[in-house]
Amino acid sequence: MIDWRAIDTVLLDMDGTLLDLHFDNHFWQEHVPVRYAEKHGLPPARAHRLLMDTYRAKAGTLDWYCVDYWTRELQLDIVRLKEEVAHLIAVHPDVPRFLEALRAAGKGVVLVTNAHRKSLSLKMARTGLQVHFDLLITSHEVGLPKEDAAFWPALRATVPYDPARTLLIDDSLPVLRAARAGGIAHLLAVYRPDTRQPDKDVGEFAALRHFADIMPGLAG
Image (cartoon, rainbow, N blue to C red):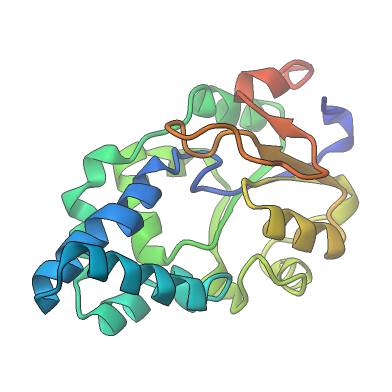
């Protein structure tokens, strides 16, 4: 699937790519609505409807990914609420082995996530994956969401990668399309970001089911 001889740098998404998206789906779709209903004295079903509409209005923006924004907007301590269900944070199979193989092969390995730094810190504390990366970059630090094609050239101010020799693995089709528009030559989607959901539509992109599937050829 991948000619590793053509790749110098690997950019990796976090939620849904390295980590099971079940945590985030459960958190925003189930846990937050329950706590929001309790906080504001609303019936659970009404709280859920209100939040789904509120989320949709911010989809694809930096605000959507910002812990501080939602803490203010919902009047809830989002970090504390994430800690309440942090036991659901899980690493996809073969991820540590894949990351170790990338480093052993001399590839540049960079985590590039839309997640807020506070969410990133929580997840790295739970998983320990940070030891495998050269850099951990959030879109908040770049000032643009990954869905914006301008994000990818702007990222080069921090990560001096060659787009023609870079692989991005991400579970978001809007992000992959923006990265393609931003010049990244090698792109992979993810079939099952949330292990409790069926395969997702990966559009026009090649996709992986397990990281072990793309490891052949990496060692040599």
